[in-house]
Length: 519
Ligand code: NG6
Ligand code: CA
Image (cartoon, rainbow, N blue to C red; front, side, top):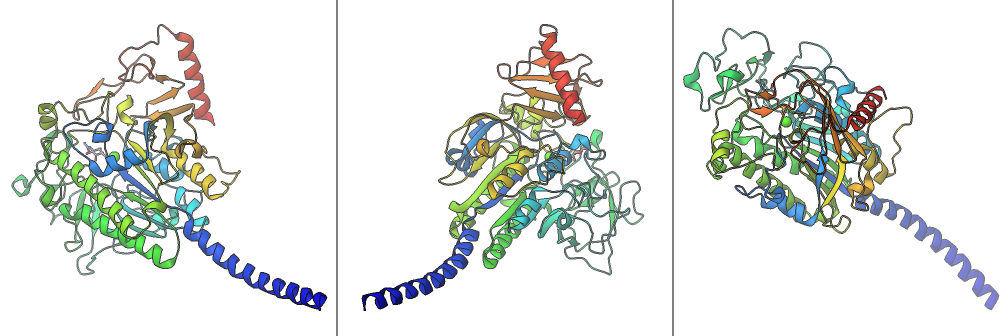
């Protein structure tokens, strides 16, 4: 009897174990899928190191981003790869230095896609791991593969071919035509009776431009800097455009629209039971700075300050949405910027005057800014939040946005193909605060293609001709005919050129830069 009982018991156990096991394996997989963290990158445009109260700004308060900084890991030495937008975005998405590839500098609004469609990208790493991937906001990486782009059809290749399941973007910048939204690579609100044409050389006969009709403008462009082409919503743009009257956006609605589209995307991923990867490329605080009406006049810093407040509010809206859905704790949030700050970038919006009056320094302790080879060009705010996983401790570790690809691949157990060269390094431990050791070196790219290298506390900037100050934007370029060497860990503002004093250090860094160039 006992034997029989044992046999019965055993077979019962075996059966129920099989049942339980199959139940658990389905369940466990599902559970695993649900537990894998969502990843949200909040990538702002032209936000400087000194533009956040958590990074020392006094004339402005950014409570939502500060909350991320206080409860997450705040980097003080993190870099975008370039001091302008297109190359930095190329790098964060492809894990490669943009200067390795021709034609990756600031793109016009009618350029073709510059990210090859056959390479591994940051969103493709997430796709391979079963994530739903999306991009919302500013694209500025080109669209299509032939010229001219037909804006009245779906434009391929684009974000989808780069690895995004969903896209809601504007093609280039807010100051470039075409001033339209595109959802999954089709213009939103397109009217076939009013087809869209874009040109960057010549004006369309029926078109009104800022140059000819300044009386139609609600914000004036700086005559030295153009932005006097097509008029949309009382603002002159770079480039020309005809048609698409119903499709053109209103600048004041950009922030709210992108927030809504981001949250809709998050909801779809929840419905599908998939973790999400969202690259939310917030269009603020790039020119034309045209805050939502409720933010106009809210800061002491003119429209530039107002759009910082609006951008911070957007972060708050997204945080609240995640919290409401119970997924804030299981979402890794990264906040950063694509290049350093600029006050006058083409429109007379009082940014310079108000900053001056408030003794406001958008680059914080650094010199230079957007376009520059100096540190203000690429050292940007960088915050990582992940509840319970990332300790709320500041770090001085050197970090590059380009490393997100290899680091997330490591987190997700995805291998980057060995045959494919990338510059992206697995620095997951640095990202998540397991170590304070960062990269040993990083290359910085200026708008004029000057390269600099930061290595073990030193920075070398290669000689380059050109003015020391970019007069239109009033930013120090970092140009010098002579090699520059700074002890950057001590001399943050790059005030004392030590090249003559340490010629061997100069040689060593020159050599290293050449090696990296040839990799
Ligand atoms: C510059 C524009 C500037 C801005 C920038 C791109 C002029 C004189 N200036 O060429 O206004 O649009 O390109 O900014 O045209 S970025 O953040 O997208 O790199
Ligand atoms: Ca930018």
